[in-house]
Image (cartoon, rainbow, N blue to C red):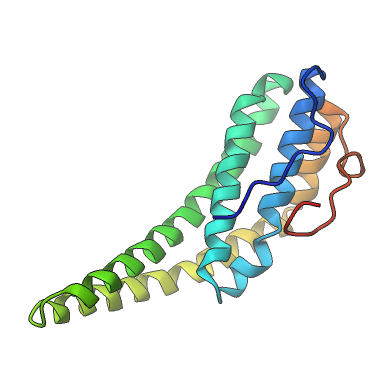
Length: 173
């Protein structure tokens, strides 16, 4: 599992809004750093890391909701939940396929055809998730959600990307 990025500048006695901005934006950039690999679909660990990062982001949004006006904040929370849910549907199938393969390896010869059938069906269902994921991110970008989300967090916390000194690198350094 991908290690969480450290949150730059996070200190024990900082203002709640400053901490909110730093944590939320760090988690957002962390999650989005896996977008390209997730869309390529060549390594299931990219999707897994993105989903884990999206769950970290959702937790941060829940923890810091008090830093934002509730009515304006809810649509952002719903959108991040949508991302997590779509990624979760695909990830659940990836996990099922891995487990079914392990079961098939250990199964009695007469049980293997049934397990292989389940694996094939799971693969077909999983392939159907790729265009759903691609459309989700295409829609996010068409609507300008990434920039809008960053502006919203910045407006209400004062924290900007440059304050975090984050490169668009996986390790968050």
